[in-house]
Length: 405
Image (tube, rainbow, N blue to C red):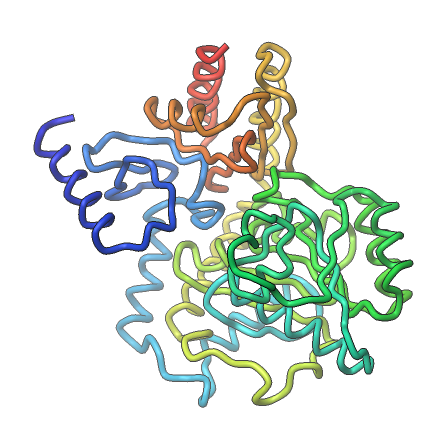
């Protein structure tokens, strides 16, 4: 690293420390640009991206059609307001529904906002059931956002601590523990307004929910006339090999949330509501100033068009299979690899040691991975990554793991 480049990074760090709230534990890198599955830092050092901005840039970096959609829409109109109709908003809602299940869409700006809308939807359903204290069930280890409502549904105490009493009547179930789920429904019964869950718990360590657990959740929510809501913010938009993760389970939920990769890096979120429950939120009951603006919707629509027209989903299985095979080999040869799990290109490698030092060493060698749940490496490359770059990234990870023994 040259003195000039080091000076540039130091300047960025100094400005950040001086003017930004210290809410992130950052690595000492500032990325300058990206191409495909590659990112380049302030010294033009290349990195293979196995993180995709935490499952955001599913189409990689610098995708030409996304850039063109942004340019064209910016030249036309970026924002008017939800006081008026929007062609871009209507077209996006149409493509979401046509690729999921009959219903309607509320468009917002982020995953937290989408889950906040879901929180209100579930509570509203409970009110229409004449419940004095509507109960929401969620999963231990889950993450649904950092607003008060979304944080109240988050089953991670570290996220919840430090803000006093949150919204009550939210109770947590052990993931994949069918008896825990049954016990919760036995305890709260008809007072349950809904159950929200990630089909693969992300921040909690990349834990896929079993078919038995999810099907039982569907059965119990139907029996109690409560809503089943899936948080697809991290798993949606092809991450698991299908457009939405719930497709692996054979049924659509009563509602689901989207964000992250929906806008290929441009902020946008959505709450998708099944037809039966669309009357719950009427005019004036929810809204957003920026949500559904022309620019965000145009980019999200283009994201759908690219995924669908290029058969990207069909290519994920081959890359996923190769990556899982490599990781299983690492598990059999490395004593610090405890487990490998996930689906598609949403992969977790559980270690017997803290994962952040592994992530730091991978960065030094030119590979971007993520540390979550203290001892899990989260791997989420772009869906468009080549087999060659995927293998090269695996070579780096394997060398780091071997060097740690």
